[in-house]
Image (cartoon, rainbow, N blue to C red):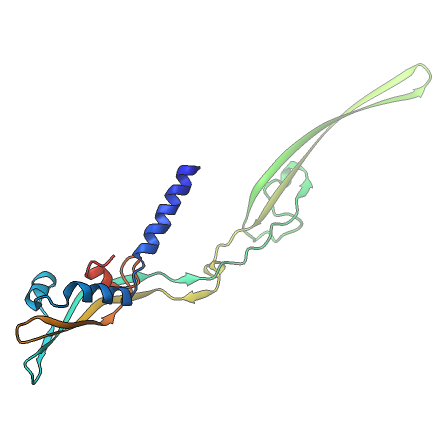
Length: 207
C-alpha cells in the first residue's frame, strides 16, 4: 500500500511539473538567450521564418518551430444509468429473463442468479395408530437483469466533438548590429503535445 501511494504521488508530481505555462516558458527563454548570439540560437533551433531590418540597424527575426497536429477525441457527459429492477422470483425457466414484465425486445444481461431447492416433510395423523408422511421437493430461482446501453446516445450528452488541433510555437527576436539578442518574446503559442500547457515550453526544452 505504501509503494502504491508513493507511485501515485510521483505520477501526480510529474504531471504538475510538466504543466508549464506560456509565461513560464517566456521567462525561461529570456533567461537563456538574452545577450547571446542570434547565430547561436538559429544554429541550435533552426533558421528564422522571416527578418526585418530597422532604421537603426537592428534586425527583428520571426522564428517558428514545433509545428505538429494533435487529435482530440470527443467528450461526453457521464451517462445516466438506470437502476436495475428488483429481483424476480419464480421457476427456473425465468432465469436470465427480464424481471417484472420488462419488454422482450429489451437487451438484458443477468448479473446475479440463484437456484433454491427446498424439501418439506409433512407428518399427519388421520386417525389413531396411523401416521402419514409426505415429502415435497420445491425448486425456485431468482435473477436480476437490466438494459445495457447499446446506442451512441447512451454515452451521454456530447460536450465537444472530436477535432484536430494545429500546434506550434513562434518567437520574435531583436538583434543589434553585432547580432546579439537584445529582446526575445513568445509571439504565438499553443497547448503542448503532451501534458504541457505551452508548445514553446516543449520545443525550447523548458521544464
